[in-house]
Image 1: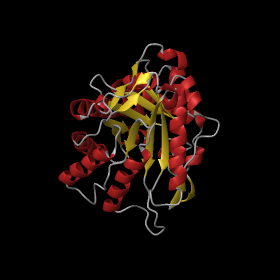
Image 2: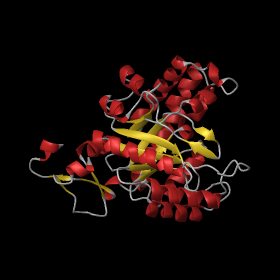
Image 3: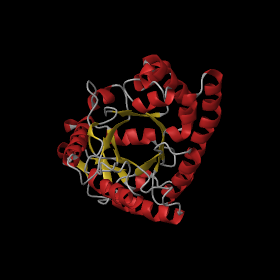
Image 4: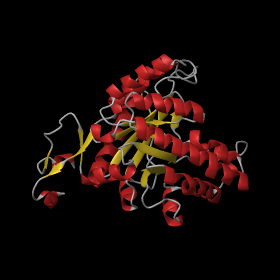
Length: 338
């Protein structure tokens, strides 16, 4: 699509900005607040959610239990968010059909298969079988999200880059916004996690490599270990490096940290150039271990308040997406080859 539209859209202005075609621009507008922040409720969890709902027996959690939990969270929290990220298996179409997802709220839909294959120190990522960018577009999604496990120095890195590149090309063909979510890991079989300095290096280099042409938004990890490095000034400097490394807006995922920790991370990240959040378990995690009226009370009370607080914070501090993304300017007759 970039090749096809290059002659009918003028791209010369704001050459330092990524240019979005009409479908991508409309998707972006539907997913952001009036102030230009991305405040996404993330609920595309599948295997992790089963573990949260039944830690001792995740396999006992069936389709209906997953759907019911997601619908209850979406119905209560979506009005406090600018967009919701859901999966096609037990979330996206169900949220539309039930009415839990408000019509005015943006919809991001995952295209990745849950989990990874291969060794834990050499992880492979893939698309969800039977699903596609085209299907997400057809169902009315405003954006597509692809999660990949990635370390720039491991053997699968090239294949992951190709996967991102192919998905970006398909998103260009379908003219739908593309969000990439890289998750780092340790390539050392004897280490379960990256040390903080190594994580910073990997997250920043990943931002440089995976924000290739056609990638519109980066959903990024906090670029260091907040326990190992508790100094918020160090947080700010590292987040600023991440902002410099990414040519597209980036949003901070929550990675299962506590809400209070995430709130601090969000404030620092947005002050350092992040454009918002994709908040998951930090907002709603405790509700998964509750039942009945206790779950409902937590979701409608504490979790809803958390999402509202995060959105207000991003509206106040986040870098507006239009500082990095701008619409292409259509010339006369642009639609003929669209």
